[in-house]
Length: 259
Image (cartoon, rainbow, N blue to C red):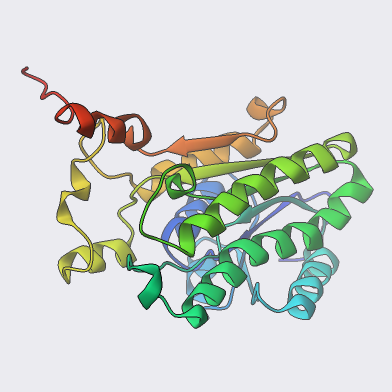
């Protein structure tokens, strides 16, 4: 893509697969110039398929993140939107069997990486007094779950979102979060098939199904659009009603549609 200072670039960290890949396809279809920034080289193929660009990005590497942000700004023009999708999952397990290596990896990618990427790209948005950042959090940030590194890291992402929204709002930069429910990504689908996750995830919410990755992407597209110009600091659940359903287990669970 040739440099064009009038282009409002959209950078998606972790855009090589899953929700990040869905965001890349959705935003490209809406006419936005998309950059996939990912440690996974598969992102090159995804970027090529949508007519976008690919840059190698390791969100745990301070120097790499800052250099990547500067290089994209130099090569392609102003970054108007940043979508922080880079993240790693954690299998449910008791804390006494959860290694600190796994705990540190999840926190470094999901929490620290989100903060580091936000600061690196926001520097340029602040100078122009315009921009948006959307962080992918999780419904696990709002409930007690046996994910003792992942859930706290995602709760921190929500807190980071609120703090940065207040900090950068006066500079014209909006910061929001989307909290997906159980989303049928290849990673989760594989975990269900191999018995690592409960297949009943399909029905344990108000709508009785899992979230589709493109549904999360559509929520992101709304939050970065002018239609959401007055929205900042929010955490938008996209969960098919999981959050409103969990407490019903105390009363025997959700009533069937014919009850």
